[in-house]
Image (cartoon, rainbow, N blue to C red; front, side, top):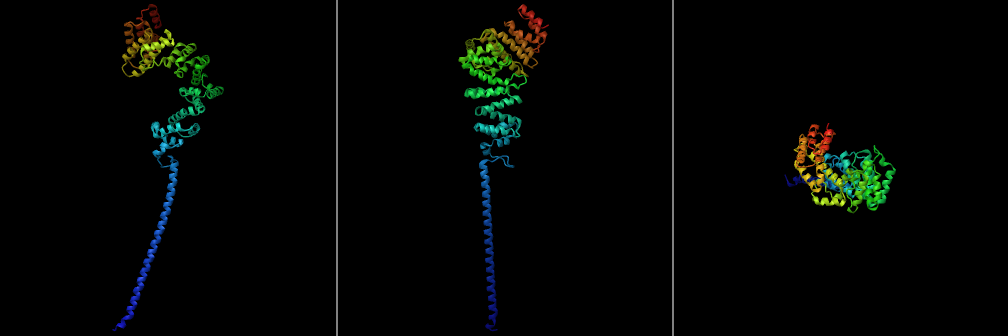
Amino acid sequence: MKLIHYAPPLIALMIGAAWLASLRASNRELEQSNLSLQKKIAEASGSSGAKNDRVRSGTKGAKAKREKKPSDEGIKPSDDWVNTSRDWSELVMFNNNEGARFNLTAACRRLEKLASEMSGDELVKAYTEMAALPVEAEFRNYLESVMLDQLKGKNPEFAFSQYLAKCQNESIDPVRMADFSKWLARDPAAATAWYESQVAGEVFDKTLDGKSPTMIPFESAFIMSLLASDPAAAEQRLNNLPPDLRASVGTYVWDVPKEKGKDFVDMLRRSMPMEEYMAILKDNSLTEYNFRFDSKNDPKDIQKNMDRLGFSPEERSTLMTQHFAEVAKYGAMRDRGNEPSRERFDDLRARIQAIDPTSADQATGVALQSYLENSKTTGAQDFVEKIATDYHDSGAGDELLIPLIEGSANGRIAYPKDRARVLAAKISDDRLREEMLRKLN
């Protein structure tokens, strides 16, 4: 076959191949175009999502910067939030589930610091709003105490009004109101006006016995304030209190200026029985705290101080007796379940003998009675009887035995009368011995 005969099929084949190549190229272009379009769509979608994420993240970030709150479900507050938050209510509720360790947490430390930083108005608002929060009682009482301590200086009218309201509805320690004296010194006009308004409103007349012991912190503040400027007015104020409440001022008048010591002691002498005013002076700056448990002051210095205050022999004896009896009382409580300690009695008796020898025997006898009255140990009767007998046999006076004998006779102490009669028989004074034996019949 000639070459010309192959031409038409060859040309057709070449044309078909060219068409097929063109078709494949078109397909590739279409595929590339599709891929490019998909990529752009994906990029656009990703960009939009990222933008939305940034917006959402920015919103959350802004909220977190404003304040991340622990009440959001599933969110645990960061340490930064706990240590910087100013949202009192959120901090309170976050710390409310800590149980007995509520005051050992970082959140509680933050609440305490926040209370010191808040203004009076902020504290009043937080205090008022907290009343509606479901807070555990012990935690609530603690927080209220923290807030009111701050409010004594920032809004004393509110603080002391709240204390008085609590006195009507629950038992609180009146010592919490002792800071009234600071307000009275700082702003006497405002403090006096507030107090007089409470008296006029009969706030203090709501106690069952009508004697209103809650008045004592306030009256004590006025008494001490007047002591420097008008001693007669101070004494009149003290005498206006019911007689059985006057000794209560001792809790609030412990810091008396030395230059006013004589006026103060004389005022007490004229206003209450010796036992009451000596109990006040026993724990007072005028006696230089010589009769506290841990006092190690030189007995000669104590003697000089009592001389300076003009204490009579009776007053000194009363002071020594009260001091020894109080130490014995707490010694008895400490000895419960343990072997009684003779050494403590010997040491304190020797100390009192060095301070005021004439008071030592009576003070020792009352101390032994106090120990027996407050002791729950099985050997307490043998213990005090042995000490009393040893001291008396060594030359102590009959007055050392009297408190144990009289305590047995009137039932004040658990000491059998037959054993008390043995002690009574040791009394050297015939008349006193017969009197004590008569009481034991």
